[in-house]
Length: 227
Length: 293
Image (cartoon, rainbow over all chains, first blue to last red; front, side):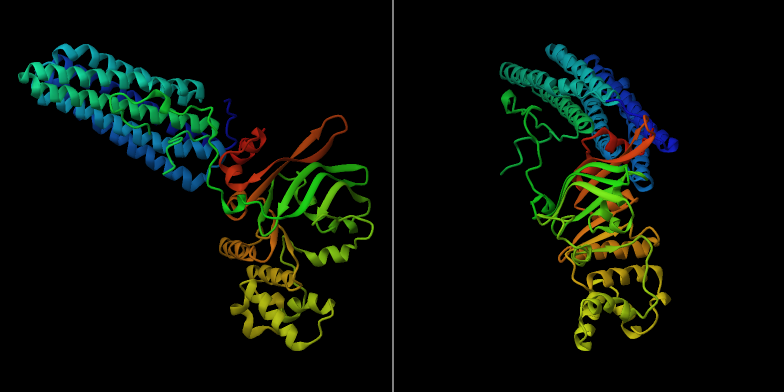
């Protein structure tokens, strides 16, 4: 969707600022997914701590951008695609911030595992992490490019993350049945997999929002609203 | 949000975009009210100059319909054609269909005076007569033959109450209408218009000369009046159209470079909630979001 520039240049700059902040926030949380999972896989406690500390940058961006959106709503009273852009942006902020929190949760599991590694599950967790990062990047790129087809692909691909999660659940169950020693680590591995799966859901939300932004059609909860 | 899988959520549970996602909950305005005006391919001319073309829309009973668009787009021209205000402009005429409850407004046996009894008008600048408040409101009923003082008193009170002005002027009904504030004068003009019990009230930028508080009062009044009247409003204030109207028509102006003529056209007409959040036409979108030229 080609957007003409706003006649009001100050307004255009404000919309650009919101866009930039979302991009910075998404870059930051993408890095948090990568580093938190690496901290788990490599038993790197320092990396886990740095990841947890970095969360304040995401929170700061969330607050600043939220405030900017509020000011734009109050001062510019946007309509049409500008209105959808601002309401979409405020929702994206929430999802991005939640992804950052889940990164923190994963890093906390790395601390709880106290340097122990997740053994055979490393490969699947690493794949989930990479897929989450790719999906996040694609969702945000589709937002910047206002490309609903790319967003649709992100939406459809969430099944893959879910599949990996299912595999981890079954495998952890089987391992615990054969080796009760693995129970504690298994719980942590399950939690990490669950957090990565949740990240996938938040990324799906972002994709849904992009489709709404461009097409003006809300695809959330389709077929699930009736009793 | 897609919910977490219980390790194997069936993939087909996911609905795809091909599914129709129209909002299943109709807004009150979406329930089709009876049609009051039915315009089809309406064109309005000043002599040989075609000022507006291709206006096709239905205005529905007890709704507020807003006409918006840039200067010169023909929105006021169309509004004025609805109660034959162009009759007084030499050379002005219309082509196409302009039906009021199925009756051709410009039919050979239809008198402009009769049309205006059913379709009243409120103008941009408050224009009370230089008479008392009472006489302003009683003017129309008197012209229509009401002479009984008690009956006139009732009409005046009822109209002023409906125009949310009664409490402010009831103790000075015999004072000059020119002595009250601009906002009060505009509400007086609305009272004068509805005193003859029209079915439709046309409003041509009724708040453009008023401050924000007076504007809010008029907008509030408009909503209240929809229980009895059908309202069509022309406004330059898009936020006002978004606030008060059920449906919005967006007009724009087309330049014919060949003969250097500008013609107003209707671009899009839809429920206001749809028009302002998600218009279908790119020209509407650009106008609403302030992307001109």
